[in-house]
Image (cartoon, rainbow, N blue to C red; front, side):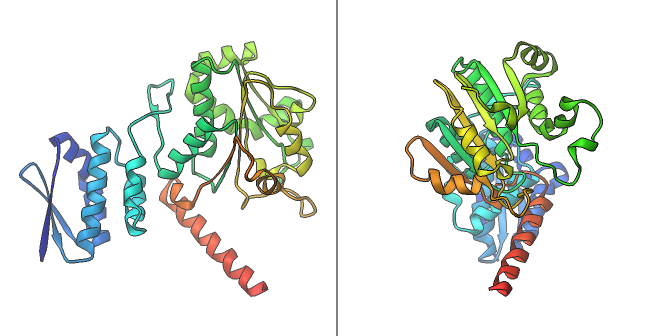
Length: 323
């Protein structure tokens, strides 16, 4: 048996690393086939190669993240382990303690994966950004956080969030209430993100004053949107005409973020996704960024990542059979 030793900065850092009832360490021990014990203000890792080196690299990265004040959740450990397995652990140094903004409850919103960090950088550097990737990667939530940051820094006067009201199963006409009641379920994820950022009272006040606007995509037609941060969510369900209409609403001193998952298109088979087409048309244009997330960027429950992988494998096999 070989051994490795890693020093820690403090007892609280070790407590964060080990987790509730040593759950974090137990998961790492099981994954790499090693034993991890407390020794002399640090940890000793006991095992055989290659598990010993993998555990050392994973634990080193987790200690560094803990020293930056990051919570070490199950998702964080899973993500760091996957990066080490891919030989990409050096990229983890990009994950700094810098936050995007602070929510109404005092929570600091920050990138939890390298993919999220690069997405945030793209939004900072470009006027228009297309964020494409699977569910649970934080595409919409981080875009809303960046919109709130821009608003608080007085870089924009309005935040506008929109989605196409595509019928996925239920018909709008059969839903109860007036037009606003019918479209609100489609816009609920956007309301939730803004409510989280601003809190109930401020959110209601900004909505009443028209500083925050959450509306179906059809409401954007014919407008010029100046000094606004505009987010188009679920853009995979736009047609070519709709996304072109949206893009040409861009006014002076405004920014746009367009998010979508091209594996979840709810359009009729006869309609092509405007997002898929826009990625091809806009590629290479200066001041337009295109960012692609992967399943590694999923920050929801671990099963979400496993589900995405399973579906990708299924469709890949089916496409090969058809070919």
